[in-house]
Image (cartoon, rainbow, N blue to C red; front, side):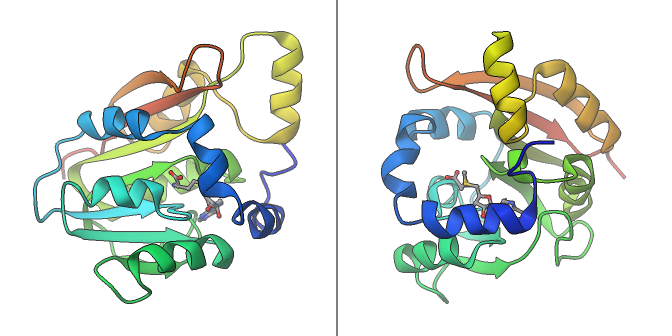
Amino acid sequence: MGVLENKARARLFYKYLSKVYDRVNPFVWNEEMRAEALSLLDIEPGDRVLDVGCGTGFGTEGLLQYTDDVHGLDQSAHQMEKAFRKFGKRGSVRFYRGDAERLPFKDGSFDLVWSSGSIEYWPNPVAALRELRRVVKPGGQVLVVGPDYPKSTVMQRLADAIMLFYDEAEADRMFAEAGFVEVEHHIQQARPGSPRAITTVARAPEA
Ligand SMILES: C[S@@+](CC[C@H](N)C(=O)[O-])C[C@H]1O[C@@H](n2cnc3c(N)ncnc32)[C@H](O)[C@@H]1O
């Protein structure tokens, strides 16, 4: 398990990274990639949407282009502080400090659940994916963006030491174990040579 697949360490990491996050993020996860990911979803105006690991609100901002009922959850007070500056603490977006593995919502609370760039820090990704499935309505879509597994052995060793990087076969396994159906993956990249993201869209089973 990578050094950052630990909630306390990830919190400490984001205490410092939050200061520069919005400046460095576009090198690996930019507006074009976000727009492409959003286009994979069937979001209707008025849909209630949850952004898990919302951080400074980059995904949240994209979701707001589709619906005004957006809820953001993150475990880092420092990241959320940045999000509050953009959207207000008690503005149109409802924010929650919490853990992806124990979402503070009732079953079927959301029409859609989004999570970009957070799964790689979750110590038990399958448990958290089960939570995403639990809180979305039966038949609802869940989108998860994570880091694609590198091809070279040296980079794989480095990646494994840091956090969760995974390929499509591993994503299939995790999403199936978490109870999803209709799972599909899209590889995304900011520019040739930059790290690839694996974006998975899956559906919770119908009731
Ligand atoms: C790379 S940032 C992604 C932020 C945002 N979603 C985006 O698209 O830019 C990862 C975020 O996941 C959050 N995170 C990591 N582990 C978490 C957990 N177990 N529960 C909730 N949030 C978590 C971090 O605090 C951080 O803000």
